[in-house]
Length: 392
Image 1 (cartoon, rainbow, N blue to C red):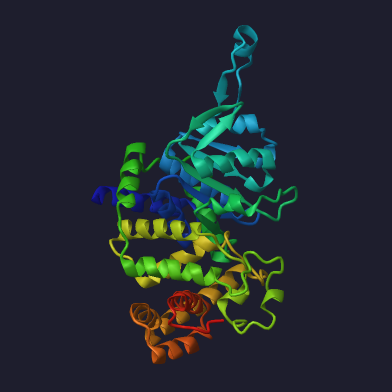
Image 2 (cartoon, rainbow, N blue to C red):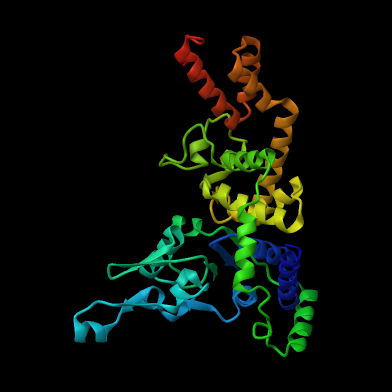
């Protein structure tokens, strides 16, 4: 195991030696490759290096066993998924499918995925969702793979892909442009590698090594506290007493007159899906495998990468700043819950109804929608049992 961890750290080092800036993004991108059927989305403005980072990761993990499909080249669905073998059809009357190299390759790259037409994207979405592809009524099962995509959503000619498609990506990395000093460092790196950044990138992990790593990561078990934290944070971003998931009216209009208007829920227009929990859990397991420990601070650092592409905010003018503010307040809320014993109170009430403790819980529920949601479930149970007779 030690040599495998050393190789993963070498991979991070090799990428960083060629990709200047965004060091934390590189580390998270590599972590996300340590679980099966990983999917990574890189978003950045033009010239920020999103294609370069994608290629460096694919080279380091797959060598030459990868195929990149470019959305800018008007690629057809047959080139991405599969096409009929015409000679077989003409000579034998038999429909044979020629599966694309993209489908068969272990490493899959999508350059400017936002420019892929919806019909082609649907096939890729099916691949990511079910681990299989269909073409002319034939199915092909897809084994383990690495899929890395990049996009600049603001480019002209961009297709608006549905949220479920982006939800299939485990993480989303936002790359910033380089600072002045970083630009000079990039010039030095280009000279060092003769301008051949991608071509000089070695394959650090072979297929069997990556399979072994992914197998070990899959067997990692997170402690109850970490799993509880992951689920609680995601639920805080989902919960709404007015059911915004099913409402036609979205925040901030939906929040008018709501006493939770200052809570996290009022800042979320569209909540993240349950896949946020799955992706964050896999990322946390990979971090624990590589570092041997997972601190609370490390977990909070991983959270934004799994949420940015899955939830929309009421104010999206400065995405990173707004997310930082939301998660900072969320972290304070978690500490406050622990200090005031929110979950201990619910545990005691679930074991035995106590009027005094219930009254205190009702007060707490006015400040916490997730706590209020859980208390409401207990109230429904007590009402059915006759403990509470006038529940409204």
